[in-house]
Each structure stands twice: as structure tokens, then as C-alpha cells.
Length: 472
Image 1: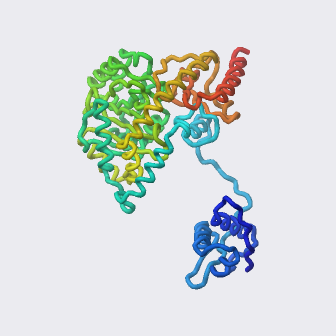
Image 2: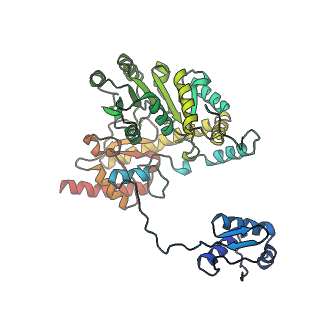
Image 3: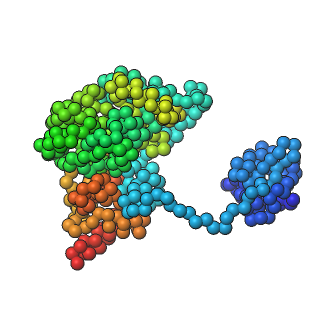
């Protein structure tokens, strides 16, 4: 078998160039399946590289199943290297419009993303995260083998205890339980707090995953309209009396998608009614740290017998190094810890230590303050251009990631989002956030992604066309 020399290019690792050259020779059929490669000594002489470099390349090729090796015999081209000339890929996920729209909202993409649910990567403090990663990986305290601590890394939970105390919620560290992410935390809480057939109360509109997750648990969902004044509290009391929901799942500060926060008076009335009708609250506080002057959380006002608190760091730090946590009454915290063990939901200690370092060394607080200010500035600009486009805002912008806007009369948000996809722009129409037909003329805007001239130009053009069609 003949292996020719490689004309190595500057600036590209030699290991990578060897792997690419050998892969191409195998996949093009130049090297027959089962044929034996020259010895390592011969290959290093032919290629002019060190034994270390060659072995690294051979290991990578073996990892791709392009080569096999045998002790004392050497390396061979794998017998099964043929690949089908064409493969028809089948997307097994739902293909209705709303399902198609949801997927790019929660996945990375180079498209224009005014409807997205995360901050742009360039807004995140990547340097601080990488520095924390390097420090954690080098530290002898990181356990390479074994699972994380069932309730969560104790130093992180102690740092969270201090953070919560500053926000008005004083709680023993034993009642703080980490989870891999907020959705999994919510899923485990629903398994502990609800049974099939129970009634659960949701806001209308609300985060679309709430409906999807509750459907998996077989519960009945009833909704109450979220308004600038909180609720029509007479309607809320009637709903509580008629349906007797066991749980109310809500976001009290910077609600997704409307950006609304309960004022203290609204919160007190809500807590009074839910206590009267024995409805436990699960408070999702994923966005509260982005509020410039957050009102008290429901858990801080009512305590953990009435409210279970859920939060995390995926929005401010990184969706790829996410760690979340639940703050609960003692028995619920114990049950949640046991469920983590039984379901394999123990949180990655690597990620826990990264978040702990950022909290304890102050980089999280500095980054959060910068994000709050930057979002307020961007939100003001986005508000202005949405108004110029003829959109109305039923909820005043208080800060945070989202603006909830009502489109001009006659414009259907779903159809507008469908047209936007053709121009590589992802929008978040109101229909994604609930089943009420009244939401069809509304849309959620991520201010960080919407504060961009290209987004404004494409949206204005789409809206102008839609308004013309509605009038015609």
C-alpha cells in the first residue's frame, strides 16, 4: 500500500491535515478496505512528522471507524467504510407551522432572530465563563470520576443561599436543590406535585413549554389572562372557585412573553386568593435578575409552604453551561433530591463549580448589571421602531429581554412569521404562547436581537406587505 507525502499548509495543525488526507483516500476508494498501512516508522519518515503527531492522527481516524488496529500487526483500513451515495433524511418531528417555528426559537442559528429566547452570544461574558472553566478544570477539587452531589454542590448552594437572602428569601441550604435546567426542574416538580387529572392554572399568554410539559403529565389546564394590572381578580376568584386548581405555574418578574411583573399590591392579592383556595404556586424566576429594580418575589412574600421557587442561569450566563435550582419546603426538597437520584437527574458538578466561581468571585454580578443596562437601552430603541411600524404595546417595557407587541389591525402573526422564515428571520407570534385566538395579532420581540437595522428593515417590509394585503 502506497502512502504519498503531504504538502502541509501553514496555520493548520498537521494532525488535522493528516486526518483529512487519509480520510479522503479511504472514502474515495484509493485505499482498499482491509489493506494494511505502512508501519508507524515508515509513515513518520514519509510524512516528516513526529511519532506523537502520527499516533494522534491515527487515533482520530480509528475514532471515526476508518481504521482498525491490531496489537503487533499495525493499522488497517476498516472493512466497512462504504457510505451510501445519497441518504434521504426524514424529519420525524411535527411539521405544523407552530412546531416548525418553535424549533429555531430554542436552537442556535445564524438567522435573524428577533423572536429568539436567548441573548446573542456576543452579549454574553464569554471571557469570564472560559476563565471560570479553566480554573475549575485545573483545580484538584473537581472530581473526574463519580456523580455529582445529589442535592447539588454545597458551596454553590451556599452561594445561592446568600443571593436569595439579598432578594428577601432567607432559607436553609438544605432546601436549595440544584437541577440541570429549569425545564427539568419543573418536570420533576410536576411529577411530585401533580397527578393525572389534576387542574393546573397558567397565565395567558405564557411560555410555550409550560403547555407542552403539562400535557406530558396528563393534567387539565385552565388559563387566566395576564394584563397590565395583573389580572381581573374577580375573574381569577371565580376560576379558582369553579375549577379548584391544585397548582398555579407563573413567572412573577419579567413574565415570558409579556415582560410584565407583579406589583406588590397585585402580588398580595394573588397570594391571598390562591391561599384561600388552596392553590400552590410554582414561581419560575428565570428572568428576574434582568429587572433593573425587581419587585419582591412571591416566594419572599408568602414563604415556601405556599410558593415553590425555581430559577437558573441559562439566560444570563450561557444556555450551554446551564445550572438551575429549586427552593422548596423541607419535605418537597427531600423528595426532589430523591427523585434526582432515581431518575438520573443529578446535576453536572463541572457546571456547578463554574457557576459557583462566577457567583463567588463577582463576575456574575458585574455581568448581570451590564446586561440590565444594555437591555434597557436596546429596549428603548426597539420600542420606538415598533411604534413607527404601527405596533402597540399593551404592557409597558420594564426591562428584561422581551417586548410584547400588538400588530396593526388585520395582520395575522402566524402568517407573518411564516413569511419571515422565507427570509431567514425567526419571529415569535402570539399563537406560540397560548390557544386564545386573541393572541393571533400579537408578537414577542427579543430586544437584544431586535436592536439591529437588518431586523427592522426586513420586519418593516414584511409588515407593509401584510398590512396592504389586509386592507386589500
